[in-house]
Length: 247
Image 1 (tube, rainbow, N blue to C red):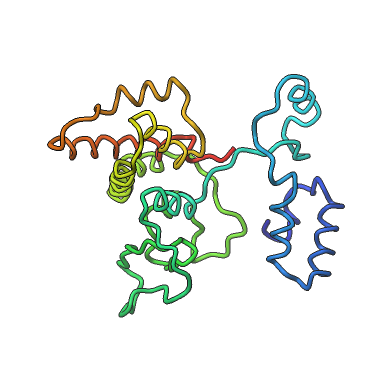
Image 2 (cartoon, rainbow, N blue to C red):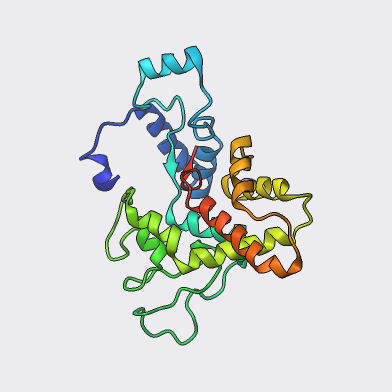
């Protein structure tokens, strides 16, 4: 994307790019209208899986690298999406719009504590004090002009989801929220957690494993242990590959 594409590969759909450029100008250079047209297109709404048999074989034979966009490519959630999704599941996401971005009295960005729970689009981007989650998950360097973010899969990302206090706190909050809901049993709670975090229903095998891990319904004296176990269950979902990747 840098240098107007002069140092990259030639486009696979030049006529489409020309069409979109003309539409962009004809629509008064409206970025909002351009984005709407892109996200409502059939190509954008495809899934990475689902094709089987002759269709899949024909696609792989004709275009194994998917340059012609015959299916969606799996992609990772960016740092902002991870943060906002975790906060949404835990019930901590602040949906307020507008307003100041920085805490009152802030005079320097060194040591700034990112404790707000508003959507990441409102988070201040400080050169010398990025949230640790952003640093771990390939947020663009705010000191540079970055045309495309890095796309890494490294151990610190998994370690962050396994050990960072923020992830643990949000997992516990999600567990408390789930246990407060009036659901029939633990199977229903597991299904609810899967839908909230992964956007799908669990398989029978996943339900069995979860039931083995989670303590059964118990007396009020065991509430704290039960909440802690459900928090660890949520944290395992947040740390899973299914959460990190979109199909």
